[in-house]
Image (cartoon, rainbow, N blue to C red; front, side, top):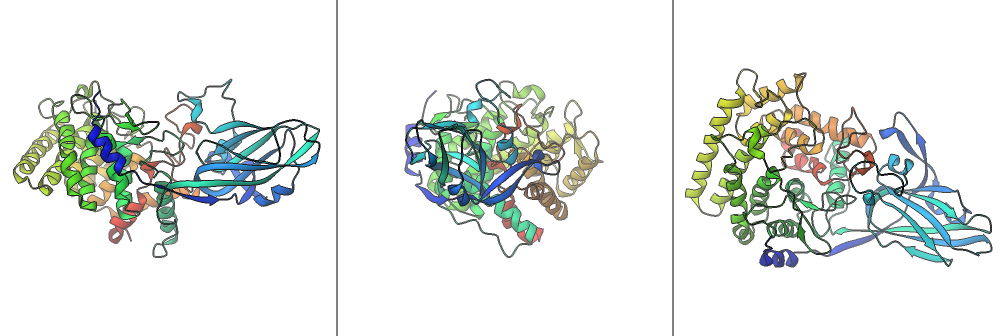
Length: 518
């Protein structure tokens, strides 16, 4: 696969320096089974963390530290002998956990393989320290709030103490996360958690999740860039991310849905049509928000090519169930979701965004052609799938879903009145396929606002993202279903990320749409 070295050089030139701040644990906590707590576990403070410097520890002892909020950084432990004769190495097992349940439900990666993702993503370590006193700096970066420390050795001859523990938090230099006093209390809390979620994913690229996968994905970048534009405004990071993704187009011009940054940049070899189409909107917004015309012109052919590839998949101006053969059609994690109507909406949306980008770059003729093509695809979709009476779009198999309705609104397949009718109908439909996580719920909220459903959009923000805050989240989760707290697409709930990029957009809604929501 060819690599565009000029694009890689442009990405390298935009690489930001990382800021580092020392953060200390706040409490020692006890993990307790609690049916009323999220995932069945609560973390109850039992004393200040610094009191552990005076407590003797030996084999079999377990302590859990709470750093007060979700952090991303590198951890070091200060260990000392507190009594007896230090006649052997010290061995500890550490579990870095984003949520209490993750710390409370350890597993042995040598004997168990839960789920289908690599267990190496689980943040557990066994460390051995030969000589005490010592400061032991772990080499890896962790994403966590809780640190569970289990003493394996010593057993008998001497005891040790945790004389100190610190995390060097790292990420792009952005403003501190403080609550907005102009927002109502619950919305201020949602906003602060949204901004912390975004901040903790901002490193030398916009990562999807700092625990897992630590990759740059186009779909996540699209939502991160929206929130970044109204909060931290680190457009250098958006520019770098766009150039990295564009550097790894395959021979036909299609982008990989993701790319890796380390140890050297490389493509992810995952072909997500809907993510590729969102590259267009991300570039269009980058131009509007940053004013960087040079970058927009440079990457414009890449954006146009993604739409051309999508258009080539159509039959009779429709994206049919067989149109996506050879592609990963994502839309949402929901099992059983029929994708093709939503994908058609995404293609129309990309065409409209491309027309706006093209016009902004001065080519009115090409922009008019894009609009005409979008209008033609809208007419085909309405004729094939749209029921004016209910406002619903049904797939070829007759499926009704929030995905169909949201993307019909965002793309302009339906107008505001039709969109509002469809969104209200789908909410009451007993067989409607609901979103599985925050990524699609974002697009539902956006669609509601475009249809004038301001009260419903605010209620969804308060109910869904506010539900995570009420469950104790200090960053927003990758997957969240209030009715199924252990929902996971990976076969193992602790493989889920509790800080995930696509969940950060309440920060955008509460700024971009503030006058309508408050």
